[in-house]
Amino acid sequence: MRPLAEAAGRPWTQSPPWRVTANRRESHDTVTLELEPREPFGFRPGQFNMLRVPGIGEVPISISGDPSAPGPVSHTIRGVGAVTHALCTARPGDEIGVRGPYGTSWPLAEAEGGDLVVVAGGIGLPPLRPAIYHALAHRGSFGRLVLLYGARTPSDLLFAGQLAAWRAMIDVAVTVDTADRAWHGNVGVVPDLIGRARFEPGNSVAFTVGPEIMMRFTVRALLAAGLPEDRVFLSMERDMQCAAALCGHCQLGPFLVCRDGPVFRYRPLARWLGVREL
Amino acid sequence: MPQTLEPLLRRHEFFAGMDREYLALIAGCARNVVFGDGAFLFREGDPAQAFYLVRDGAVALEVTAPGRVVTVQTLGAGEMVGFSWLMGPHRWHFDGRAVGRLRAVEMDGACLRAKCEADPRLGFDLMQRFALLASRRLQAARLQILDVYGHAPAG
Image 1 (cartoon, rainbow over the protein chains, first blue to last red):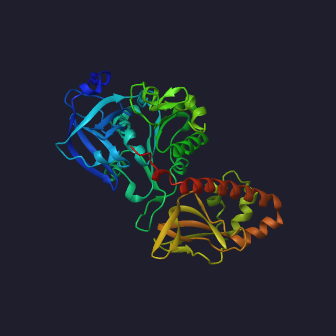
Image 2: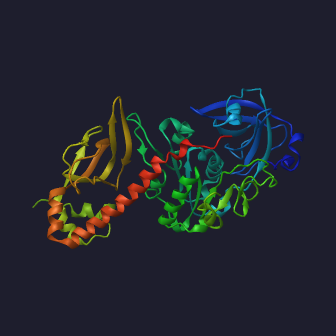
């Protein structure tokens, strides 16, 4: 892996913008932007960058590409607001403000030697994709690799071509909440896939990302399947604005998600997940 | 002598842990069935006289609305399909359609109800299994209607 950029520690105003090299449509509302850094850049799976569109704003976006691949850095973005819509319409040659990488990463070393269960919901797959790339690049270090992925409808599924390719290498199960007859796959919620998946609960680590309600149900299903609480990790989304543990917008109980997360071990987070208004 | 389906029932997740004595008893209500891709096991509103234990393939539960058919759930190998045989008015609430070639065990509802009435311990065992499954499906249905992927925070 290339060295981590020093850019994260300096004022964003001093970070040179990155150039868009490609804009790839993943679904009707989601694109992957390939951004070319101006200086050496590296990241760990699960980390995020702050992407800035001048005059509109800045948002945290997970890095969705292969952490060991040289060249442009992938960011997968769903257009849900002013900044993300502007990012989704960026064209090759445009410049985007970038600072990062920030945050904690997936504890892949801890998962080595056992099965790795990855549970993604909706736009939760992009922040997990670098972990899957890593696990595939170090295939011999892991037992069974299981990807369980849920989306709203078939047209919302991301990385469809890649999912098909991964099926040859790992256990992949996909489900959607609703579909018409053109869909021949599974219909149901992603936590229901856990009971059907093949892995050794006592020798597994699970990573999950998705809407918070989906993650709560997912964690319940993982624990019911026999995974210990301290072997379950999740990535949290909160209103991250500074990404430098200064503004406090992303506070979750005693944690600042931008500094202490986004990847958390479930056990210390558990009591805060069910607290109203947090 | 016809071969009993007891070994098939014993291996199916729905009957996991059930007394062999009961499995032998209810195997008399079971028969193997095969459906081709797209074939209907049952249609909404029809009398519900059975439930199904999926062995291979899957069943899509569908509801038809003007101009469209929506799949609300699919149930695959190891799963049970059908609660409507259990409670009045014993009519199907959805269409059940085979996705791919489907192999299943069909359990005769009237036969089972009679055995449950004759032996309340068997009845209690079966009701516990159906209640647990109904509870899980209810939780899943609640999560499904929350439409959790449709409400991302704007940014």
